[in-house]
Length: 144
Image 1 (cartoon, rainbow, N blue to C red):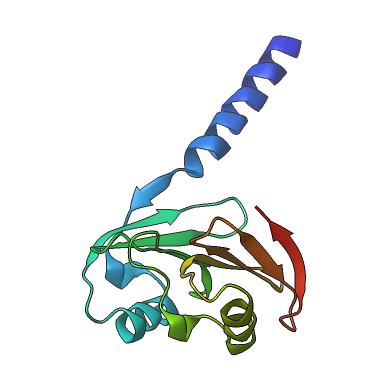
Image 2 (image 1 turned 30 degrees about the vertical axis):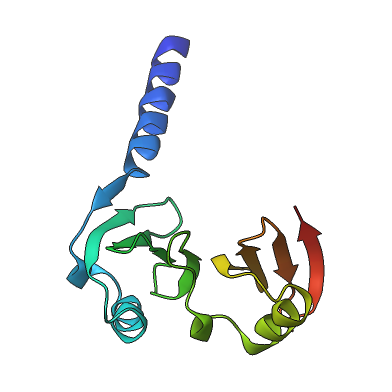
């Protein structure tokens, strides 16, 4: 009986793990809000690849553009993260208060990454620093 229970639990765990894998999807299959974001902010770029991560809680989507930019969206299409190591994150996508702080403190840098997570905003700069801001854009952490 114990072996059967272990086998059943193992099979269920394997099912959950394999379900969480990324799989390719068409751009038209991601949430409308994510499609609109990409079209409005990256009109000059082509979508190279799109994946859907069927997470246990809710799916996430990743969109890779021809300039190397990677965009991550939630299941409802809200932006979670931009990675733009080559091109830099477009300035219009960075909140104004973050731009003001960074420009005053680190005038020669560009944004390599921007992430929104549970009300916190994190930017990774070209000088290697990671800055974390709270929901009202006050700096709360600097990491190098």
